[in-house]
Image 1: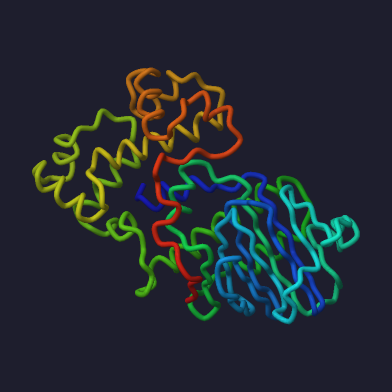
Image 2: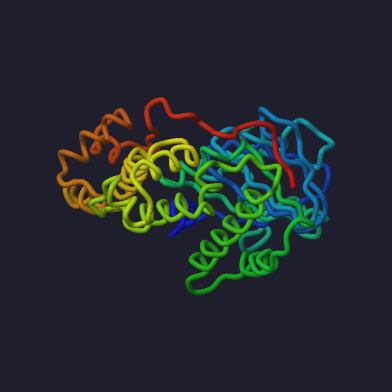
Length: 330
């Protein structure tokens, strides 16, 4: 498992919100649902997506936008700045005056909008949770990135569009997996652009030494790793591994391993009722006490407090986005 594969295991859709929007201009929607991640797929017509802290970017058919939350953003035809619809947490859709619109604008199975024959059609896929592992991925994304239709060739879009309109056994699972595949495909295209400032761990995955070390740590984080053991596995000296890894990734190998183990532990604590000792062994700590000490040192709260809290904990002093900046388009 490479570093990207490991991180993409984090924002795995489970009961993700998938909706086809069909609109007749003029239209504008303000999304303030505080979801951590949204994919907007343009099927027909054109639309604009505009983060509160950025410039509007036009979407054309085949374009895919990834919006990193939880900050609000606008979707519109570009002619009106005043929102006609506001989306709150839980996908509650209301007018600016507070009138409920979800049922009034329902157009069928996972379809919603102002006109069933409207020229503007868009698919929205919303991840309402990503976990601590997924947050490590989100932290290196800009608030908005767009992969244009002419920069990739994906057969996923028509499949997702067809499946989104169906209602059948395990349909939610099918949509979750299709959304995951779309996210992975779009991020790979975006990370591989020459002009993208891809995170160090992504660039490092092609390095013959560092890439192999990352694969080992992601594949078996619970192993009793030492710097000497990692170096032996990749066939270099301890000094060479330490220096090469730090230059390529930005942190020493054992620091990276600690951060990865704790992110995995944070998600395991939320996703199961396993004891602290069990979680500790799954991620490479000898006891629940050892995990608890390391977890509190990095996250600032105890594992039990994290398990009980409603929001994903983030490491104390961690940056919110390593490459945050202006909206990106390819």
